[in-house]
Length: 321
Ligand code: CUA
Image (cartoon, rainbow, N blue to C red; front, side, top):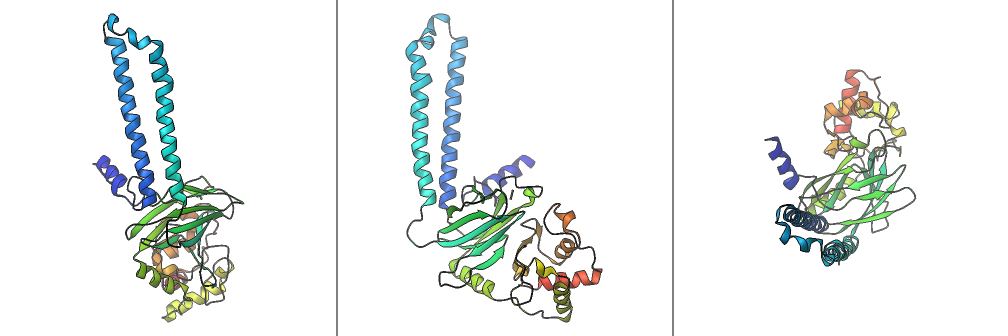
């Protein structure tokens, strides 16, 4: 049964290069299948020749040792096959970096130990919108990512939508992708970047175009005021405890830039870079014990709060929709 579940995940899952959900990922999946099928056929051919060489009567297998056979099978055949693959691969790669037709949505993603800073460039001269660990895109429109890093090499990979591209210090790499249908696709850092590398994931949420505009408009709003006194207490604790030294909550005095922007943390699906579901319990657990939940991440654990205070801060953050 386990085998079937793995196969199902491979062909329908949210993080599989064999379950493409956009033209770029489709091109890559097609190339993979061509290579897999070709390698399989050539393997069968070689095995058949080997069996013939071993089992056929000596009088009938002499042609296998012929000089022309060696040149045809050992030089001409691989040169032709590999050249054809090279031409096909280069043509495909060209299509993967070009943007057809309409102006792409520009998103800048910065890899950080061990999370993703996401910046939506505004085309009307406004400040870019900054968020983290969850990338929202419209369906049917090309998106061009500028990929950089704040520290070491990371690698940006959403297998269902595009190929893998490294984030390299001192360099800006560009990746174009397009989602064909609404959905949530999972991505993962694909280059060892330190102790918490395996816990550096993210999600791409593809919306219908109008829904994406709604999301963008909501996300541009400053944080809303806490609706309850309990949450207001959480906000006061958040500010007094110095959380704002690292985190920004637009509309409050918290304007740190070291960690993820928390202005709309309550609307995100997960916390800790795609690792835990986002709810009051995981938020409280994260604040008290982040080093236990994601060892060696850059946020220290804060085991200083009483349970009640912790719940108040978590309730405040959960309310930042
Ligand atoms: Cu970032 Cu691995």
